Image (tube, rainbow, N blue to C red; front, top):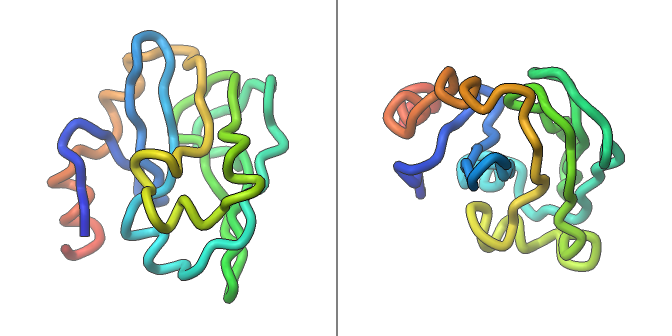
Length: 126
């Protein structure tokens, strides 16, 4: 299992990467492995401002559908449209090509309150 040190994590299994004044969000390697084969990613919150811990979309796997939770408050400014045709990329490359949304956070400092890689590993018992 992969836990990039430069990322922040949530108890709901999302990861956050800061790129300037924007954050990139996806689901963790652990989450995609638990879900199994991902067949659909639904994000209908583009251009909306979402509060932390609110649902920003969902991911559908062969066996289940799981909500996606916003790690920090902000405006969803981009959706990874490649996932519309190739949702399996989330399974293959969850921290790279499998990113889900880009967000302009209300307060970039909120990222510091998220879990680091070690705390996330402890959370999932890795």
